[in-house]
Length: 424
Image (cartoon, rainbow, N blue to C red; front, side, top):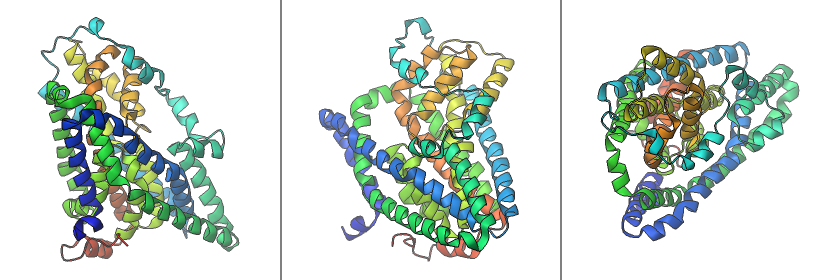
């Protein structure tokens, strides 16, 4: 009991099991527990924007050489684009080989598309020019209020550069911002205590709402998705971690609290502030963490990328929609743009997929009804892969930029070293 009271990992894991049992045996109660998960995500979103803003500003303001900013930023973008593109290719390749939708022979005209109206209407603009213009906020306050990562990141970078160029004159303001950042992370620590309750509510509602029958009916797609994400993490991210000088499995053990929280809430956003602080604790420079982690949310949605190609091709297979090589290349090109900025909140992947299929006009959007019932379960794989991808990417960029303390990393990840370094 003492171990349970001190371990967030065990608390969330136990809560997930209890939530599943409630959903199976008392579904009427489970359906009423969704607000527990929704409230937790809202609490995280409450501090999400300030944490990102302050971390990026302070990271840049403390850089001794602003050339480091450009160096880290360019390496981050190159890394993110390469890895996320590879994730798209993996998803496309696996679903084309396994072909989970073949044989369903679904007529799109017989599907009830009313449930899709909110997703299609909520779909974000997909043109490159609109995407780039959206980076510039209408106002800094507006982007903070809406929790929009790219505009916040854009404003924070400009603010941090301005403070860095002011030198010693800006130090009083930097100290105040540092105190604000510490206070925000204290709030995050308080909020994280409620993660088990959120996980219980999320799992109870999900199992009550959809049940295992709906999962089993599309189990092949789900199994393919989870297997692909596992292989991507184990092989691709494992090789990246090894080339960066650390063990992926020990690193994942270090992040066990964040991993089970993401699984329980299906949102990578729910652990972002905690993840940033843990990356600093393990040896990444604050300036690198402050820049790379927020950028990773936008430009490195590995789980989303795998999901997009697999879901799109699955719908085409299920509805007997023939896709030429040209169609697949167009789909791939659109998703390379559409995937950026889609990670973070549960359901955003489904919205972006709806927008992509609408813009292409070849794969029937009505076919999304087929995966609507299991999207909540697939979002867990997406969120988990996104979170691990961002964490490993930050470590890799820090290593290649010379801002990673490998001695500290090995000290924290060594099996003989207690992993409760962060718990205080």
